[in-house]
Image (cartoon, rainbow, N blue to C red; front, side, top):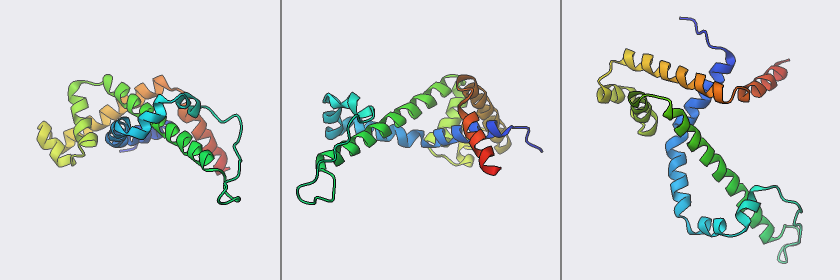
Amino acid sequence: MISSRTEKESRIRMHIIGLLSRYKANQEKLDRYRDDEVVREWQAGENYAAALLPSKSSNTTENALCPDLPSLSFLLEMERRQFFSTLERLKIEVQLVKLLLLHLSDEDVALLTNRYYKGYSISRVCAEMFFSRSTFYRRHEEILDQLVAYYDAIFPHTMDSSLKATEKGKE
């Protein structure tokens, strides 16, 4: 069987599989961060929104203990910015998966949940859902095709730039 997918569709497909595979871990991280005292303190402070924006001035005040290193407050601020950037990426990925799953039937969501969120083997998914392996593979492919089409409709140009960069690199 020859695949009729374009390179763009293949990239979107791999991206969606990656999102689905990371969904549980991302959700658990967000839950853990939400309950963390330091994170709540950082978010409650007025610097939360400012931490998401690029720094206007670089704090290069010398560290009193080691003049060759930047100040501890500068290092802490850089860590805070990196953390908030990661936190926002996690939120976006979780929301994107939820959005994609909204457009599927309950049975399709159950198949993806069993496979990716619960981490079941294909055999166990088949046993839980009373599918044959061939039905699983066929349904899985159909679901991914639906998700690729929906993703491409929402974000029509997101993978185009990475494709062009890859093509330029090959030349």
